[in-house]
Length: 410
Image (cartoon, rainbow, N blue to C red; front, side, top):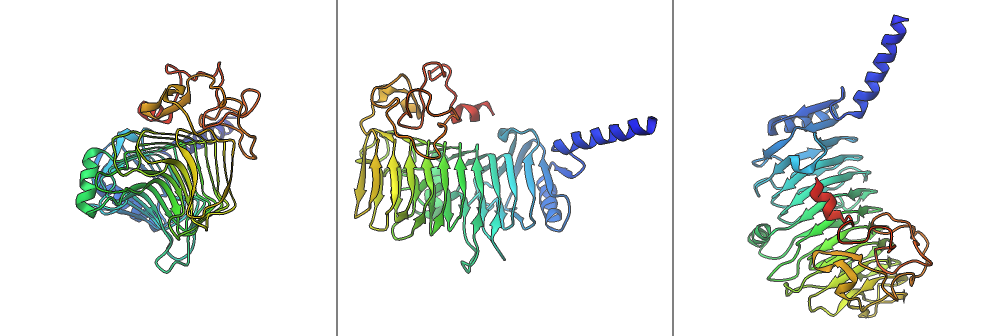
Protein backbone atom coordinates (compact mmCIF):
# COMPACT_ATOMS: atom_id res chain seq x y z
CA UNK A 1 0.00 0.00 0.00
CA UNK A 2 2.78 2.42 0.95
CA UNK A 3 4.51 1.77 -2.37
CA UNK A 4 1.26 2.41 -4.24
CA UNK A 5 0.75 5.71 -2.37
CA UNK A 6 4.28 6.77 -3.23
CA UNK A 7 3.67 5.98 -6.88
CA UNK A 8 0.47 8.05 -6.83
CA UNK A 9 2.23 10.95 -5.16
CA UNK A 10 5.01 10.76 -7.72
CA UNK A 11 2.48 10.87 -10.56
CA UNK A 12 0.71 13.85 -8.94
CA UNK A 13 4.03 15.65 -8.63
CA UNK A 14 4.76 14.84 -12.25
CA UNK A 15 1.49 16.44 -13.37
CA UNK A 16 1.92 19.53 -11.18
CA UNK A 17 5.49 20.11 -12.27
CA UNK A 18 4.59 19.60 -15.91
CA UNK A 19 2.06 22.42 -15.67
CA UNK A 20 4.53 24.80 -14.04
CA UNK A 21 7.02 27.06 -15.79
CA UNK A 22 9.64 25.96 -13.23
CA UNK A 23 9.33 22.28 -13.99
CA UNK A 24 11.95 19.57 -14.05
CA UNK A 25 12.40 20.30 -17.74
CA UNK A 26 12.86 24.08 -17.38
CA UNK A 27 15.87 26.21 -16.70
CA UNK A 28 15.34 29.49 -14.86
CA UNK A 29 17.71 32.35 -15.62
CA UNK A 30 18.30 35.64 -13.84
CA UNK A 31 21.09 37.31 -15.85
CA UNK A 32 21.85 38.11 -19.48
CA UNK A 33 24.76 35.67 -19.48
CA UNK A 34 22.58 32.90 -18.08
CA UNK A 35 19.89 33.62 -20.67
CA UNK A 36 22.42 33.56 -23.49
CA UNK A 37 23.86 30.30 -22.19
CA UNK A 38 20.41 28.75 -21.83
CA UNK A 39 19.56 29.53 -25.46
CA UNK A 40 22.91 28.10 -26.59
CA UNK A 41 22.24 24.94 -24.57
CA UNK A 42 18.71 24.59 -25.97
CA UNK A 43 20.10 24.87 -29.49
CA UNK A 44 22.48 21.99 -28.69
CA UNK A 45 19.90 19.60 -27.26
CA UNK A 46 19.59 20.93 -23.72
CA UNK A 47 16.52 22.21 -21.85
CA UNK A 48 14.09 23.80 -24.29
CA UNK A 49 11.88 25.45 -21.66
CA UNK A 50 13.59 28.66 -20.54
CA UNK A 51 12.10 30.82 -17.81
CA UNK A 52 13.31 34.39 -17.22
CA UNK A 53 13.08 35.65 -13.65
CA UNK A 54 11.45 39.03 -13.05
CA UNK A 55 13.76 41.95 -13.69
CA UNK A 56 15.20 44.30 -16.31
CA UNK A 57 17.96 42.88 -18.49
CA UNK A 58 20.23 45.27 -20.39
CA UNK A 59 21.43 43.22 -23.33
CA UNK A 60 24.39 45.42 -24.34
CA UNK A 61 24.61 43.95 -27.82
CA UNK A 62 23.64 40.36 -26.96
CA UNK A 63 21.06 38.84 -29.28
CA UNK A 64 19.34 35.48 -28.90
CA UNK A 65 19.30 33.24 -31.97
CA UNK A 66 17.08 30.16 -31.60
CA UNK A 67 17.95 27.32 -33.98
CA UNK A 68 16.31 24.37 -32.19
CA UNK A 69 12.65 23.39 -32.56
CA UNK A 70 10.14 23.37 -29.70
CA UNK A 71 11.84 26.05 -27.57
CA UNK A 72 9.80 28.18 -25.15
CA UNK A 73 11.15 31.38 -23.61
CA UNK A 74 8.76 32.84 -21.04
CA UNK A 75 8.66 35.41 -18.29
CA UNK A 76 8.40 33.78 -14.89
CA UNK A 77 5.32 35.60 -13.61
CA UNK A 78 3.04 35.52 -16.65
CA UNK A 79 3.01 39.36 -16.66
CA UNK A 80 4.87 40.99 -19.52
CA UNK A 81 5.76 44.06 -17.44
CA UNK A 82 7.79 41.97 -14.97
CA UNK A 83 10.45 40.81 -17.45
CA UNK A 84 12.10 43.45 -19.65
CA UNK A 85 14.79 42.79 -22.25
CA UNK A 86 16.26 46.15 -23.28
CA UNK A 87 18.38 46.39 -26.43
CA UNK A 88 19.07 50.11 -25.85
CA UNK A 89 19.51 50.43 -29.66
CA UNK A 90 22.81 48.51 -29.38
CA UNK A 91 21.38 45.01 -29.79
CA UNK A 92 20.38 44.67 -33.42
CA UNK A 93 17.67 42.00 -32.96
CA UNK A 94 16.66 40.62 -29.59
CA UNK A 95 15.29 37.28 -30.84
CA UNK A 96 16.14 35.64 -34.15
CA UNK A 97 14.06 32.52 -34.75
CA UNK A 98 15.14 30.17 -37.54
CA UNK A 99 13.36 27.05 -36.26
CA UNK A 100 9.84 25.71 -35.69
CA UNK A 101 7.37 25.66 -32.80
CA UNK A 102 9.16 28.35 -30.82
CA UNK A 103 7.09 30.26 -28.27
CA UNK A 104 7.95 33.68 -26.83
CA UNK A 105 5.58 34.87 -24.12
CA UNK A 106 5.01 37.04 -21.07
CA UNK A 107 7.83 39.58 -21.51
CA UNK A 108 8.66 43.08 -22.70
CA UNK A 109 11.13 43.72 -25.52
CA UNK A 110 12.31 47.25 -26.12
CA UNK A 111 14.69 49.37 -28.19
CA UNK A 112 16.17 46.89 -30.67
CA UNK A 113 18.17 48.69 -33.36
CA UNK A 114 16.28 46.77 -36.06
CA UNK A 115 13.67 44.15 -35.13
CA UNK A 116 12.96 42.94 -31.58
CA UNK A 117 11.70 39.69 -33.13
CA UNK A 118 12.86 38.40 -36.52
CA UNK A 119 11.53 35.07 -37.80
CA UNK A 120 12.96 33.50 -40.94
CA UNK A 121 13.85 30.02 -42.25
CA UNK A 122 17.34 28.72 -42.80
CA UNK A 123 17.40 25.24 -44.33
CA UNK A 124 13.67 24.59 -44.71
CA UNK A 125 10.26 26.04 -43.88
CA UNK A 126 9.71 27.02 -40.24
CA UNK A 127 6.25 26.42 -38.79
CA UNK A 128 4.15 26.98 -35.70
CA UNK A 129 6.02 29.87 -34.06
CA UNK A 130 4.02 31.81 -31.48
CA UNK A 131 4.31 35.24 -29.87
CA UNK A 132 1.93 35.59 -26.92
CA UNK A 133 1.50 38.42 -24.41
CA UNK A 134 4.66 40.21 -25.52
CA UNK A 135 4.93 43.98 -25.10
CA UNK A 136 7.19 45.51 -27.77
CA UNK A 137 8.28 49.12 -27.30
CA UNK A 138 10.11 51.41 -29.75
CA UNK A 139 11.57 49.12 -32.40
CA UNK A 140 14.15 50.73 -34.69
CA UNK A 141 12.35 49.21 -37.68
CA UNK A 142 9.47 46.71 -37.68
CA UNK A 143 8.58 45.21 -34.30
CA UNK A 144 8.01 41.69 -35.66
CA UNK A 145 9.65 40.88 -38.99
CA UNK A 146 8.82 37.68 -40.91
CA UNK A 147 11.01 36.85 -43.91
CA UNK A 148 11.97 34.12 -46.32
CA UNK A 149 15.51 32.78 -46.38
CA UNK A 150 18.13 34.69 -48.37
CA UNK A 151 17.64 32.44 -51.40
CA UNK A 152 13.83 32.80 -51.19
CA UNK A 153 13.31 29.05 -51.19
CA UNK A 154 11.65 28.63 -47.78
CA UNK A 155 8.98 30.40 -45.77
CA UNK A 156 7.66 30.97 -42.26
CA UNK A 157 4.35 29.12 -42.05
CA UNK A 158 1.36 28.96 -39.67
CA UNK A 159 2.54 31.36 -36.99
CA UNK A 160 0.53 33.20 -34.34
CA UNK A 161 0.89 36.70 -32.85
CA UNK A 162 -1.71 37.21 -30.13
CA UNK A 163 -2.61 39.16 -26.99
CA UNK A 164 0.37 41.47 -27.40
CA UNK A 165 0.96 45.21 -27.21
CA UNK A 166 3.17 46.81 -29.87
CA UNK A 167 3.92 50.53 -29.68
CA UNK A 168 6.09 53.37 -30.87
CA UNK A 169 6.40 56.23 -28.37
CA UNK A 170 7.51 59.81 -29.00
CA UNK A 171 11.08 59.09 -27.90
CA UNK A 172 11.17 55.99 -30.06
CA UNK A 173 9.87 57.94 -33.03
CA UNK A 174 12.75 60.39 -32.77
CA UNK A 175 15.22 57.49 -32.60
CA UNK A 176 13.67 55.82 -35.65
CA UNK A 177 14.36 58.94 -37.70
CA UNK A 178 17.93 59.05 -36.41
CA UNK A 179 18.50 55.36 -37.26
CA UNK A 180 16.80 55.21 -40.65
CA UNK A 181 16.66 58.78 -41.90
CA UNK A 182 13.08 57.88 -42.80
CA UNK A 183 9.85 56.52 -41.32
CA UNK A 184 10.78 52.90 -41.87
CA UNK A 185 9.06 51.40 -38.87
CA UNK A 186 5.90 49.44 -38.22
CA UNK A 187 4.21 46.74 -36.19
CA UNK A 188 4.03 43.33 -37.91
CA UNK A 189 5.65 42.98 -41.34
CA UNK A 190 5.42 39.65 -43.20
CA UNK A 191 7.13 38.72 -46.49
CA UNK A 192 5.96 35.48 -48.14
CA UNK A 193 4.47 34.55 -44.75
CA UNK A 194 1.95 31.75 -45.18
CA UNK A 195 -1.13 31.12 -43.05
CA UNK A 196 -0.23 33.49 -40.20
CA UNK A 197 -2.74 34.71 -37.62
CA UNK A 198 -2.51 38.13 -35.94
CA UNK A 199 -5.27 38.38 -33.34
CA UNK A 200 -6.33 40.34 -30.27
CA UNK A 201 -3.38 42.73 -30.18
CA UNK A 202 -3.16 46.44 -29.37
CA UNK A 203 -0.91 48.28 -31.84
CA UNK A 204 -0.30 52.01 -31.59
CA UNK A 205 1.81 54.99 -32.53
CA UNK A 206 3.34 54.03 -35.88
CA UNK A 207 3.20 57.45 -37.48
CA UNK A 208 5.84 59.93 -38.57
CA UNK A 209 6.03 63.71 -38.87
CA UNK A 210 8.22 63.58 -41.97
CA UNK A 211 6.54 60.97 -44.14
CA UNK A 212 4.40 57.86 -44.25
CA UNK A 213 5.22 55.16 -41.73
CA UNK A 214 4.76 51.42 -42.26
CA UNK A 215 1.58 49.55 -41.33
CA UNK A 216 0.35 48.36 -37.98
CA UNK A 217 -0.04 44.92 -39.62
CA UNK A 218 1.24 44.18 -43.13
CA UNK A 219 1.52 40.99 -45.18
CA UNK A 220 2.93 41.19 -48.71
CA UNK A 221 5.63 39.75 -51.01
CA UNK A 222 3.35 36.84 -51.96
CA UNK A 223 2.10 36.21 -48.44
CA UNK A 224 -1.05 34.10 -48.39
CA UNK A 225 -4.00 33.09 -46.20
CA UNK A 226 -3.29 35.67 -43.49
CA UNK A 227 -5.92 36.08 -40.77
CA UNK A 228 -5.95 39.48 -39.03
CA UNK A 229 -8.76 39.71 -36.49
CA UNK A 230 -9.79 41.24 -33.20
CA UNK A 231 -7.00 43.85 -33.12
CA UNK A 232 -7.22 47.45 -31.94
CA UNK A 233 -4.98 49.75 -33.99
CA UNK A 234 -4.59 53.35 -32.87
CA UNK A 235 -2.75 56.24 -34.56
CA UNK A 236 -0.91 54.21 -37.18
CA UNK A 237 -0.35 55.95 -40.54
CA UNK A 238 -1.47 52.77 -42.29
CA UNK A 239 -3.54 50.29 -40.34
CA UNK A 240 -3.78 46.85 -41.99
CA UNK A 241 -2.42 46.03 -45.44
CA UNK A 242 -2.49 43.02 -47.75
CA UNK A 243 -0.03 43.48 -50.63
CA UNK A 244 1.84 46.64 -51.61
CA UNK A 245 2.28 48.17 -55.04
CA UNK A 246 3.02 45.30 -57.42
CA UNK A 247 3.88 42.92 -54.54
CA UNK A 248 0.87 40.61 -54.09
CA UNK A 249 -1.07 38.91 -51.35
CA UNK A 250 -3.32 35.88 -51.86
CA UNK A 251 -6.65 35.21 -50.14
CA UNK A 252 -6.78 35.96 -46.38
CA UNK A 253 -9.26 37.58 -43.99
CA UNK A 254 -9.34 40.94 -42.17
CA UNK A 255 -12.25 40.99 -39.72
CA UNK A 256 -13.46 42.32 -36.36
CA UNK A 257 -10.72 44.95 -36.02
CA UNK A 258 -11.09 48.48 -34.61
CA UNK A 259 -8.96 51.25 -36.12
CA UNK A 260 -8.81 54.83 -34.89
CA UNK A 261 -6.61 57.72 -35.98
CA UNK A 262 -6.72 61.25 -34.61
CA UNK A 263 -6.28 64.48 -36.56
CA UNK A 264 -2.76 65.32 -35.43
CA UNK A 265 -0.65 63.62 -38.12
CA UNK A 266 -0.12 64.91 -41.63
CA UNK A 267 0.91 61.75 -43.50
CA UNK A 268 -1.87 59.28 -42.86
CA UNK A 269 -3.32 56.76 -45.30
CA UNK A 270 -6.19 54.26 -45.25
CA UNK A 271 -7.20 52.12 -42.31
CA UNK A 272 -7.30 48.97 -44.47
CA UNK A 273 -5.57 48.73 -47.84
CA UNK A 274 -5.66 45.97 -50.44
CA UNK A 275 -2.95 46.30 -53.11
CA UNK A 276 -2.63 43.53 -55.65
CA UNK A 277 -4.54 41.41 -53.16
CA UNK A 278 -6.38 38.50 -54.74
CA UNK A 279 -9.43 36.98 -53.06
CA UNK A 280 -9.14 38.88 -49.75
CA UNK A 281 -12.14 39.14 -47.44
CA UNK A 282 -12.54 42.35 -45.42
CA UNK A 283 -15.57 42.38 -43.17
CA UNK A 284 -17.00 43.62 -39.88
CA UNK A 285 -14.25 46.12 -39.12
CA UNK A 286 -14.85 49.50 -37.47
CA UNK A 287 -12.76 52.46 -38.64
CA UNK A 288 -13.00 56.01 -37.32
CA UNK A 289 -10.42 58.44 -38.68
CA UNK A 290 -10.21 62.14 -37.84
CA UNK A 291 -7.36 62.95 -40.26
CA UNK A 292 -7.88 64.35 -43.75
CA UNK A 293 -7.34 61.27 -45.92
CA UNK A 294 -10.49 60.66 -47.90
CA UNK A 295 -11.00 56.91 -47.64
CA UNK A 296 -11.17 54.37 -44.81
CA UNK A 297 -10.73 51.28 -46.99
CA UNK A 298 -9.22 51.08 -50.47
CA UNK A 299 -8.85 48.24 -52.95
CA UNK A 300 -6.09 49.34 -55.25
CA UNK A 301 -4.66 48.33 -58.64
CA UNK A 302 -5.90 45.91 -61.27
CA UNK A 303 -4.29 42.97 -59.47
CA UNK A 304 -6.81 43.36 -56.64
CA UNK A 305 -9.61 41.04 -57.70
CA UNK A 306 -12.06 38.49 -56.33
CA UNK A 307 -12.34 40.01 -52.88
CA UNK A 308 -15.24 40.81 -50.57
CA UNK A 309 -15.65 44.01 -48.52
CA UNK A 310 -18.76 43.82 -46.37
CA UNK A 311 -20.31 44.83 -43.03
CA UNK A 312 -17.66 47.47 -42.31
CA UNK A 313 -18.54 50.52 -40.22
CA UNK A 314 -16.54 53.62 -41.12
CA UNK A 315 -16.73 57.39 -41.14
CA UNK A 316 -15.02 57.65 -44.53
CA UNK A 317 -15.50 56.12 -47.95
CA UNK A 318 -14.72 52.62 -49.15
CA UNK A 319 -13.26 53.05 -52.62
CA UNK A 320 -11.59 51.44 -55.61
CA UNK A 321 -8.37 53.01 -56.86
CA UNK A 322 -6.40 52.41 -60.07
CA UNK A 323 -8.53 49.55 -61.31
CA UNK A 324 -9.09 47.47 -58.17
CA UNK A 325 -12.27 45.40 -58.04
CA UNK A 326 -14.21 43.65 -55.27
CA UNK A 327 -17.70 42.74 -54.13
CA UNK A 328 -18.73 45.59 -51.82
CA UNK A 329 -21.97 45.44 -49.84
CA UNK A 330 -23.66 46.07 -46.47
CA UNK A 331 -21.15 48.71 -45.37
CA UNK A 332 -22.00 51.90 -43.48
CA UNK A 333 -19.65 54.81 -44.23
CA UNK A 334 -21.02 57.78 -42.28
CA UNK A 335 -20.38 56.82 -38.65
CA UNK A 336 -20.48 59.51 -35.97
CA UNK A 337 -18.20 59.78 -32.93
CA UNK A 338 -21.20 59.83 -30.60
CA UNK A 339 -22.11 56.30 -31.66
CA UNK A 340 -19.08 54.90 -29.87
CA UNK A 341 -18.16 54.42 -26.24
CA UNK A 342 -15.03 56.58 -26.58
CA UNK A 343 -13.88 57.20 -30.14
CA UNK A 344 -10.95 59.42 -29.16
CA UNK A 345 -9.31 56.58 -27.22
CA UNK A 346 -9.94 54.01 -29.92
CA UNK A 347 -12.80 52.34 -28.05
CA UNK A 348 -15.19 51.90 -30.96
CA UNK A 349 -17.71 49.68 -29.22
CA UNK A 350 -21.24 50.83 -29.91
CA UNK A 351 -22.61 53.03 -27.15
CA UNK A 352 -26.21 52.28 -28.10
CA UNK A 353 -28.27 50.47 -30.75
CA UNK A 354 -27.54 52.60 -33.81
CA UNK A 355 -30.24 52.47 -36.46
CA UNK A 356 -28.90 51.15 -39.74
CA UNK A 357 -25.96 49.45 -37.99
CA UNK A 358 -27.46 47.05 -35.44
CA UNK A 359 -29.01 43.98 -37.13
CA UNK A 360 -28.27 45.56 -40.54
CA UNK A 361 -25.36 43.41 -41.72
CA UNK A 362 -25.19 40.36 -43.93
CA UNK A 363 -24.47 36.88 -42.61
CA UNK A 364 -21.04 35.73 -43.81
CA UNK A 365 -19.57 32.26 -43.60
CA UNK A 366 -17.09 32.07 -40.71
CA UNK A 367 -18.47 35.14 -38.93
CA UNK A 368 -19.53 33.67 -35.59
CA UNK A 369 -18.40 36.27 -33.04
CA UNK A 370 -17.25 39.86 -32.62
CA UNK A 371 -14.06 41.54 -31.39
CA UNK A 372 -14.85 40.54 -27.79
CA UNK A 373 -15.73 36.95 -28.62
CA UNK A 374 -19.47 37.57 -28.22
CA UNK A 375 -21.65 35.42 -30.46
CA UNK A 376 -23.09 36.82 -33.67
CA UNK A 377 -25.87 37.58 -34.15
CA UNK A 378 -26.98 38.83 -30.75
CA UNK A 379 -30.25 40.18 -32.11
CA UNK A 380 -32.35 39.68 -35.22
CA UNK A 381 -29.36 39.99 -37.51
CA UNK A 382 -25.61 40.55 -37.70
CA UNK A 383 -24.46 44.04 -36.73
CA UNK A 384 -22.23 46.09 -39.02
CA UNK A 385 -18.77 46.72 -37.61
CA UNK A 386 -16.47 44.93 -35.17
CA UNK A 387 -18.82 45.10 -32.17
CA UNK A 388 -22.02 43.07 -31.89
CA UNK A 389 -24.23 45.28 -29.74
CA UNK A 390 -26.62 43.95 -27.13
CA UNK A 391 -28.33 46.06 -24.48
CA UNK A 392 -27.42 43.51 -21.83
CA UNK A 393 -23.87 42.67 -22.86
CA UNK A 394 -22.08 45.47 -21.05
CA UNK A 395 -21.28 47.75 -24.01
CA UNK A 396 -20.96 50.81 -21.81
CA UNK A 397 -18.12 53.12 -20.81
CA UNK A 398 -18.00 51.61 -17.35
CA UNK A 399 -18.04 47.93 -18.16
CA UNK A 400 -16.68 47.27 -21.66
CA UNK A 401 -13.34 45.49 -21.72
CA UNK A 402 -11.00 46.47 -24.58
CA UNK A 403 -7.64 44.94 -25.53
CA UNK A 404 -5.91 47.96 -24.00
CA UNK A 405 -7.68 47.47 -20.67
CA UNK A 406 -6.56 43.84 -20.62
CA UNK A 407 -2.99 44.94 -21.25
CA UNK A 408 -3.13 47.61 -18.57
CA UNK A 409 -4.22 44.95 -16.08
CA UNK A 410 -0.91 43.27 -16.82
